[in-house]
Amino acid sequence: MSVPRDLHPAGRTGIGYAPAHHGELLQGMFDDGTGTLRRALVTLPHPARGSRAVFHPSQQHLGVVGTPSLAKVRRAAARALLEFARHPATAKGGQIEITSDVPRGIGMGSSTSDVTATIRAVADYHGVSLSAEEVARLAVSAECASDSIMIDGVVLFAQRDAIVLETFGQRLPPMVVVGFDTEPGGVGVDTLAHRPAEYSGSEIAAFGVLRAALRRAVARGDVALLGRVATASARINQRFLPKPGLDKLIEECRVLGGTGLQVAHSGTIAGFLFDARRPGAPERALRAQARVVELGYAPTALIGAEPPAADALEIAG
Image (tube, rainbow, N blue to C red):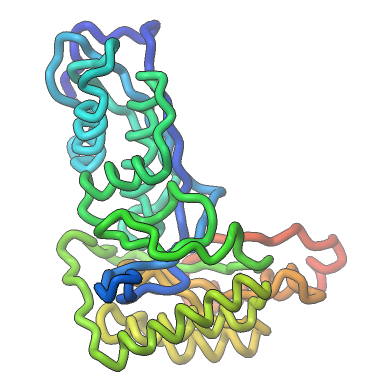
């Protein structure tokens, strides 16, 4: 990789961070309030993983350099630089460095995390704090479709239009997610090459019902209802990107005491959902993790779980 000559480690840089996610709770096509149908999704956040971007500016080098495989990152930096073209201290180009612990190609939002962190890093160099809506707009322009990790709250986000169709609430009900990869060691999913789902009229009608149910679930803190919404969305997605043994996974979740199964609609991961307020939730999560391994899947996340007591560990084992 060639590095612009006027970059210097001691020089001023910009730093940005963005979290990952663990697929979606709901994804489909929804009315935007004007009668227009838009593709939209509700992301399941995974704040324990994420990407950190460092922007090293250049006043001489035009364009952005970075890891060759991260074309979306370079494009995001270039879009962000255009955004600040009239800034008195704007850079002509620069270098982007990405550090990430987000697995790639399985549906955990690695590209959106990289892109969002990059946009924030360029903004940070310019001393500007972009709004979530501005970051979303730049992210979509860089990668065609983006998750909603840059937006606070539980939102129905039009991933190709950078528009929030609805805000359901500020946070999801307390729950534990036991995540796993349904195709460990596989080639993953190329989201750019993956053809968008072509939903039937009945499926689009179902999404309207699921949207209303999710609204109630968030408002009432109802993890059981939320789990049913996620499971229904996963079932619809089977026609477009099937998860191996989905029906068996849904039954396993029920037996383990879960409320439902969520998936990455453009990836290979899935997650058992549990109500964190039910007694014994940490122990159920441990048993679910063990069962995931028994079934031959690769664990990917344990979200929202408090560590169980030592004696509970012995019981779960």
